[in-house]
Image (cartoon, rainbow, N blue to C red):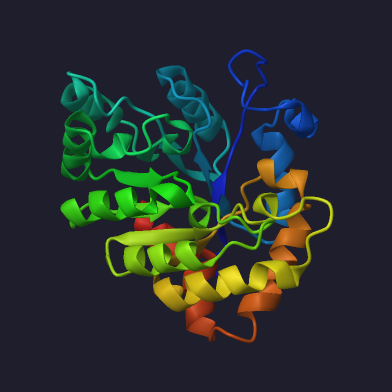
Amino acid sequence: MLRIDAHQHFWNYDPLRDSWITEEMQLLRNDFRPADLEPILQQFNFEGCVVVQSDQSALENDFQLRNAEANPFIRGIVGWVDLQADDLEAQLAKLKENQILKGFRHILQGETDRALMLRPAFRNGISLLNDFGFTYDLLVLPDQLKYAAELAAEFPEQAFVLDHMAKPEIKLQKIQTWQEDMEALSTLKNVYCKVSGMVTEADWKNWKPADLTPYLDVVFGAFGAERLMYGSDWPVSLLAASYGQWLALLQDYVGPRLNTHEQELFWGGNASKFYDLK
């Protein structure tokens, strides 16, 4: 069974650039490189991974491209590009020369304008991605799910994937509005969802699998095994769980619920298809 980790990060820690890493995230104020992840992926029988940007710059693309060139287990890169740039089309044509660069992401969750994704310039940028075969990762919070649905509905030919299930407020046990918005988003067949980033939305020190189960029930019920993909969110996930703990939780969840074919899709097939991994 093909196993792909569809969401993780590498960085060389820079306190100015990485100011999002707060004091309580002290663990993440370190370098996290391919050599740190490769033995973990091997331990748990993963063939490869998709690395996702954490810095919004062209330098980030260059950094991850170098990582991928030196480490064949990196099967794809989700980079960053300014979707509102005047010369975006020329930038995309140039970036397409890197076949391992599969798509892009903007850190929409941190924007003051919660509906930035609906600005004409941003939507124009989204409109160009499919022409070059690029995917788009939606990094949003629950209050932005309605905007994400409006954006995805406008571009039915564009492949979107929702990161971290939009980070539901598991610690506060808030679910109703998030569930309604997730179910609405899931009706758009061009939208996939990554089952990732959950433990860091729970109580980092005291979470239990049962705390996460209602949220897993929602996404598996809404998107189905055909549009869900596994992601570790390593190393951010280490704030609340080891790689093995998060993996075991999901294995225990999907084991009795998904048949063999559905598990093949969830653990690697969907990521391979969505990102066109080689």
